[in-house]
Amino acid sequence: MSIRNAALIGTGAVGGVYAMHLHNTYGMEFYVVAGDSRKKRIEQNGIKVNQMTYYPQLIEPSETKHKMDLIIIAVKNYDLEQAIEDIQNLVKVGTIILPLLNGITASDRLCVAYPKAKIMLGLSMGIDAIRTEEGIVNTDDGVIQFGYEDNTVKAKEVEDVLCYLTKAGIKAKVYSDMKRMQWRKWMLNVGVNQASAITGAKFKYFGRNKELFTLFRNAMMEVLELAKAANVKITMEDITHIEEVILNFTPEGKTSMLQDVEAMRKTEIDYFAGTVIEYGVKYHVPTPVNEVLYLALKAKENIYLD
Image 1 (cartoon, rainbow, N blue to C red):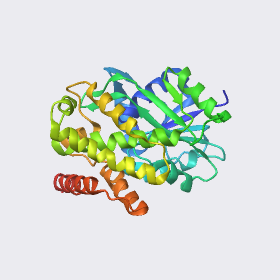
Image 2 (cartoon, rainbow, N blue to C red):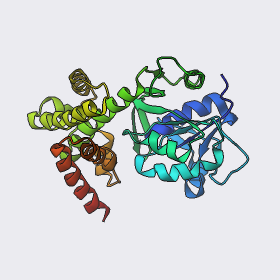
Image 3 (cartoon, rainbow, N blue to C red):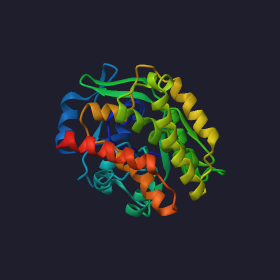
């Protein structure tokens, strides 16, 4: 394994869990990127996961002495531009950048910002972590799915990242067609996150409320049509699988977008329905369900953020 040092930016529910494992395994060779008030807060209070507090080594965005072999990005989509700016002093030629953001646009945005870095596609699937006033509560670490678009033959750096993550006890898997997996999760988010956020539904209602289930499915069907136009190998079987998975989620659980709405936080609507609408225009595919979801959720968000 040739990854000697690494950094992670974004210690919310997902990033905070993975940073804990990396800190526990790699110690002083692993950094959390944090500046100003965030740095002070972590220095004073640490990061708490399941009532256990850890104090990772911190590195400020202004630091110029260290260059990273690997940078993991776990911020929300709307914070990506700031994260791109915050990691610029840590990036060298050949730095591996692994984004774990929702949606399908993060890797492209990173490629524009850092053309000499090695930008992978990545996502976290199945993690069950939420932020509370007492810290992060996590019941399942899930699995990090990652790689380049085509991993039929694994590149050395893909193997290096796989080794780095698994050594820290983080489940990770490389798929031959990573673009398909990324679109698959995006389709899941477009369906379940948005349907739950607009209705306030916990997971248990998706199996007992016909109207909710129809909204959930119809939003995903528009992504399926976009995938056909974009030559991404998503099928009706994927939708059926997602529906079955949702019905087995913790009944009282809530999607991350519903949690954001209830906490009156900014949501990722622009990267779910917003991207669906954008791609619909690009590929001449009608997206009426997501257009309504976008207007309703954007209006709701603007009202409570006003």
